[in-house]
Length: 203
Ligand code: ZN
Image (cartoon, rainbow, N blue to C red; front, top):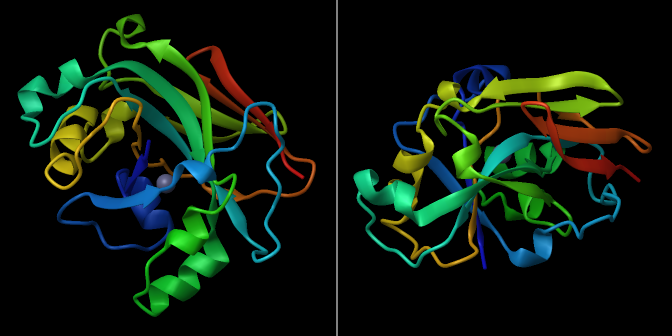
């Protein structure tokens, strides 16, 4: 399976990193080796001094598809989750400045947290899901999928023009504002509404 990640999908996050607002969704991949194993701590990698949390709503693909029409995209998933796209911001900045790919900064081991899944039926609309990240019991990131520049169904349609979606693939739909560094001993907890979907210890 693969992890398909969307960058720059929330206006306020684009502003905080002083990035340009993209004309089309920004897409990158993480390999399955990037998934942080359940119950394992996140270990800050030796090659970075500035690893950031990016909390993101996740979508799990349940059906094989390519060139998916946006109006049928909702039939390709029935589970919604929450995760973290850990990013070595210092390394990413170096790579970006040289126009090089981001993988070393975003696809390293442990860089993809996938929390528990919820049924899509639990939501009135997937286009208004409220979520947040707490660091040491303080809210650091808060958002709703209403604020996405490209909503879930549009993203599924878009990425399927390039990549065949397979059963079990996970889409990371982008992060809202409030990204920031993690430090040894931090406790990160992710919530959709009042439901806690992951708890991560940083080492
Ligand atoms: Zn991200």
